[in-house]
Amino acid sequence: MKAQSHAVPSRKPSPSIVGITAAAVGGVAALASIASVVAVGAVARMVVTPAKQRQRDTEVLSLNRRRKTITLRATPDTILPGRYGMWFGQPERYLKLGPVLWRDRTSVTRRLESDEIGLPLHGRATFSGWYYQHPRELGLESESVRIQTPIGAAPAWLVPAENPRDTWVILVHGRGVGRGEPVRAVPVLRDAGFTTLNVSYRNDGDAPRSADGRYGLGATEWEDVDAAIDYALAAGARDVILMGWSMGGAISLQVALQGRNREAVRGIILESPVTDWNRVLVFQAEAESIPPIVRHGALAALGNPWGRRLTGLDAPLDLPSLDIVARSSELSVPILILHSDDDGFVPSSGSHALADARPDLVTLDIFQVARHTKLWNYDPDRWNRSIAGWLDKNFPRGA
Image 1 (cartoon, helix red, strand yellow):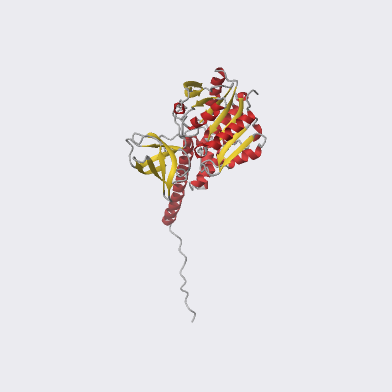
Image 2: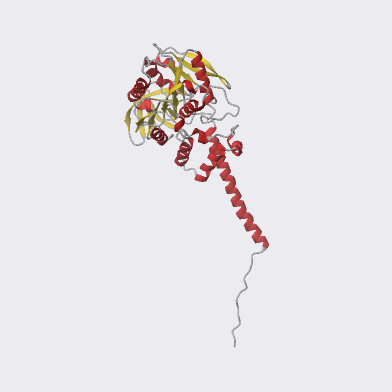
């Protein structure tokens, strides 16, 4: 007798199950897509949007009023040798910090060089490499002036040299800070006979706000520094040297390449400079573990018209034009670059690459332990010698 077959016929999912499954998969994909767009927009917007308040990146653990010391949570910045600054307290005050007195794995105690009266014993603070806030702290004559930029009058500090040359130095601060940053360069420049003009630029909190209120990463701010050259030339300067920190370096390089007054630029000094924004943004994204798809999307949003709704920019940024390494053949004046290989924010690889591309123009002074824009703080003697030596070589008196 033949065995009877008991095979179970195959069953197809009902239309309702198919529909539910497809909808679920599609919903997950849509949510993932929306999440990616939101992340791209957040990252791109963060790059070009001025911060409304300082990032409190430092923790004050204790304050010893009798000994005039302050103990901070140990970080790569707070443990650095040298003199620094810090915003702390309510209302917020700027404090000057002296050398490291003691440290262990988790904390560092420094000399407090400012009045401690009224300060809290602990809390959050913002660490700074400025040290000085205003030229008056140097005991030098200075004047507050206003530069007529394309979007309005921007304040600047003018510090005349005692035995002035007819070449001025225009000082350009970095992203998210102000004119206090370049003040530490005034003494070495003044001693060499250079009058300094310490400028502000759009959206930095001192100068007028642009229509979109966004940073141009050098692509728009250079117009304000170009206007500062107008001021210097009208006030008696024959030509200028530009000196920029971080994004101020990117701004200075744009002035030298495309400014109306580029023929008046005789030299450039750069500290911890941005020479290629793509390199910097990729470095920072990797440090923050931002996924490649978000990183690439943010860069695309910054550089394309469709990204304006995400970034708030009036016009997309031409990021390739901000790559000075790629445009190195267009440079024509001597450049001094001071950068630390442990920068932590703007990788020194861009400075190395520019020096390799133009060894005929670029003098590169590399520090090993100084972090971002804190080279003067870490070793002021070396920093001053480097600048003074470069000036003597390239701009000897009487030449």
